Amino acid sequence: MPAVLFVLYLVVEFAALFGLSQLIGTFPAILVLIGVSAAGVLLIRSQGRRVFEQLGRVGRGEAAPGAAVANGVLVAAGTFLISIPGLVTSVIGLLLLLPPTRFVIRPLVTALGARRISRLAAAMPYRGVVIDGENVVDGVVVSEWSDDGRPSTRRAIED
Image (cartoon, rainbow, N blue to C red; front, side, top):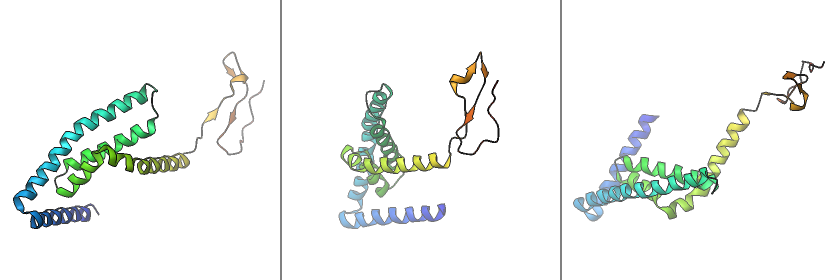
């Protein structure tokens, strides 16, 4: 599967560069490719700084984490795509680095992340033993109960 994706990536990138060079010429197409990559590199620095500032505000409790984390994911994806050579990946990466585009895509990323986390949480139910704090006398547990949803075969320890 990775080989098929790589071949598909190569075909798309070559087709885009070939089509652009047929439309505007070879030298201008190369300049567009260089310009898109340069704009992406400039945006990586400024938007990365903005995301780190947002995450700092979240860490101090001044902002909700949802938007900052989604922005961080989108900036990281844009940075990754800018670092891959090619016109299509650079344009998509540049779009992910632009704040208006992130504003539009952020609810989708937040919803996908919430759904993924809820699936992970449902797959890993809590199976620990909870000790009732009122029933501990001098460091000795005098009763305990479990909340893992299964009926307990052990009796509570009572003195």
